[in-house]
Length: 309
Image 1 (cartoon, one colour):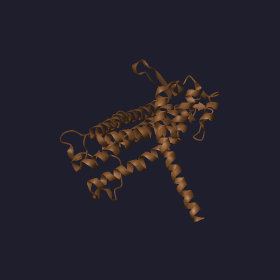
Image 2 (tube, helix red, strand yellow; image 1 turned 90 degrees about the vertical axis):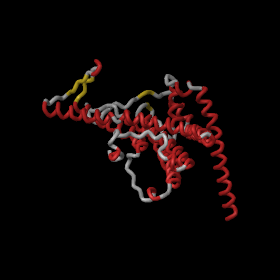
Image 3 (tube, helix red, strand yellow; image 1 turned 180 degrees about the horizontal axis):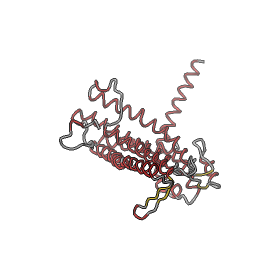
Image 4 (spheres, helix red, strand yellow; image 1 turned 60 degrees about the horizontal axis):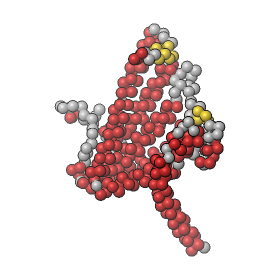
């Protein structure tokens, strides 16, 4: 019995390894096929293409396509480190640029709150009209109040990776500060591969279908097979969520779901950049720490306050 169990377990391990290798190989095929046949998943005037996009956006096939890209970039970078530094600079540049732009939503949020309090409390206004650049926007005070939540969500979701690059996130340090440079980089590599990317992947699987359940009908789920998706395409139609929690409140709650996915894309980008930076700093030694790192500064003479804002 024990021998049969051992044989069965060994066979399961071999089967799992073969599945992994085959999926990695198929990932290249799916990548080439998707690029050469864009109409099959990007032509949303065809409901079958739309449902293919929905299915593959949260599928195992898509995961292995991105895994293959990661493996190729990593393999090239092992033999040509300047290329890998270039990837780090581009990825960190993306998160920095998006974060710096999205941070302005914090100022907008403050100004909007002041406007709402001033107009509602003093003038008892029930509706606020704005016409920037000749584009008129007239909404109830409740709508403007609830839209502040969206602006706050912009800051939170799009500035997380930016804060990570800048080193301004909150961290609890029990071991990290006391270890050597290379041990720190090893911890960083382990954390990005075993925590950041897996958690972001699982969250994406939930958020992807959570978004589409509020954009189209009939509802779709992660358990739907492609064949079932294509059957649903015969009756699928757009049903964008525009109903607010209050009668005249903010009616763009589907935008929060889009922000969830945007947040996860930035986390993926930063996790990969962090892994590559940690690897390069591990290989090149302590002198490479912070190399090409684009950190914000308060200006000349304010060095003593850096990292405290």
